[in-house]
Image 1 (cartoon, rainbow, N blue to C red):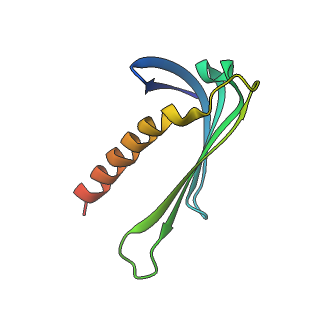
Image 2: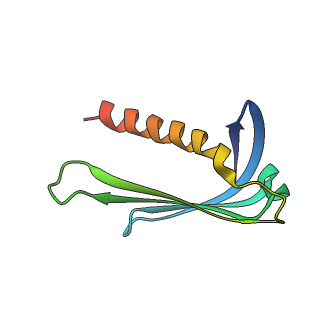
Length: 99
């Protein structure tokens, strides 16, 4: 379990997550198990899958967010897309720099 800081619309959220990975399928799973997101969501899971391109140059990355709201008054987690986009840009910059 680790603690991750998420910045959404200028506020800091504290998230406790359990992270697992599977080398064979190149998949990383993040399961939120505590913190601020559990105030609005029963379930908030993130899956990242990396599929190498068939030509051997680069990969296709799929990032899936699966969530269940505590009630209908809770918002759709669209605000977190900015955070995920910035993480994707960080990973892309890191990978491109190492080529």
